[in-house]
Length: 190
Image 1 (cartoon, rainbow, N blue to C red):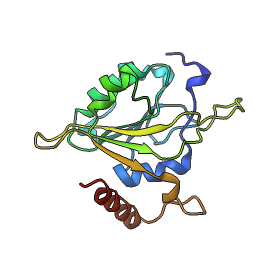
Image 2: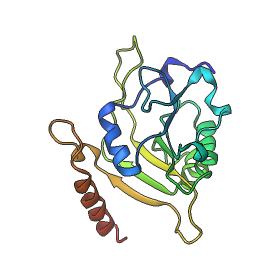
Image 3: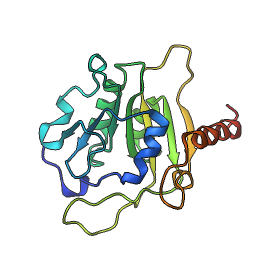
Image 4: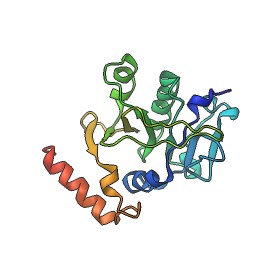
């Protein structure tokens, strides 16, 4: 699978402690290169990740991370849904652009168990040799997982990820994250 250089932007390292505080340790990064992998175990684009199994509960891989090529929403989101349905554990965490007017958003993202709308844009890390800026679009963290039958449809939350980082770009304590989530629940009547 050959990817266009425009699809190779990485997630900034300072964002990942927030993801792991929300969802737990990332067991596999399913669309990465050595320079931008967010887990020790990762699948390179050249390994054709859409044809591989991502989550493997039998071998302890319950949580997957996917910052996919934005030129192929449908393929990556469909695969994320099918992989996320394998387990009642965390599932697939996907970073995707917010595009609520698009058919792909309603067809795929609306099937998530949780959607976090990020308050500030993410400063994506360019691939080697690229110097242009990124973060030109709003993003959401989307969790695809098997939901128990009694759970309601997707929960929507708003996440001020920069506020959660201190001045030194370190994540506030897990306790402060839990307090923040509790405040969100109260604000949103949950």
